[in-house]
Length: 417
Image (cartoon, rainbow, N blue to C red; front, side):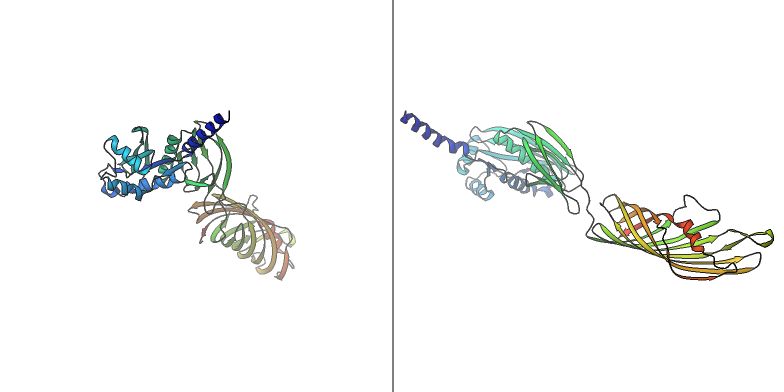
């Protein structure tokens, strides 16, 4: 009995390391099968990228290129392939490799097509063939990374699934803690089971998720990223007021210009505005003896405002809410026609207000269109008032505020940072 047990232990001790050994693969230089000699650099670049990706896979060992070149040079073989089966077995023995990967590439317009084959050295037979098409200089490395995963499953025989991941362009895709490429990522072969996915890009909030794949499953995943506000940015804009919802026929208010400068620190900004408004009053006046008359003014109102705004997020559509205070200089100057008299009133006052609006980015995060509404809080604090009128103390600031306490604006802004 003891003899049988020790025999079993010996057999396991001898066989176990064999099963535990890594798959050893030699990646030889690829052949340029196109007529474009300018792509000769890919004969070395493709194997090097494949080597980098394969070396990062647990259970696979890639023969060092220098060692491979040395053996091929000593045996006077070609880097782009071998002739008979004896040459394959010779390379296998010299490098202790189980398999050899070789291939070629050609061009199709701006795309390159890679054809590769994986050869078992012991049996000198093709284990698998692969074909990859990628745009030159754009997604070539992504596609070669996907090819490395296909080779992994051909070598190990593990069950696998395929994923396609889409997000904003050039977002980094990290699967189970390893960077596997950038978005969009197509035809990436992965092991079955649970995986952790992280998608990230500078200026955007990271996206994290867990997902589970089953054998032979093809999973298409599309995730958007939320843009983060810049640490600091500065906007200059110009706008005009929209017509009032409930116009007063006795009041005409024509916006001339509204200039805004806005400094952003994260999600908060400080906005400084200067609004210039042409204000015309055309009321009916009841004179002694039952006569009716009208008078007009043609005055300017200058409104200086400072507001604190909050942007909950940043993106194509970026809403904001804000609160501030305005210093309004109202100067009304009129001519009364019937008795040929003129008068004026000037009021300087602080007025608190609330804001609500949104910005729409229209070009490269620099130009924006914005819509906004300002609601003035009823409390007005006069700090200066001068009146000269035959009618006595007439407060036209109340008339102005009745007309303008809600204003709507549309404008454009440019971001300098």
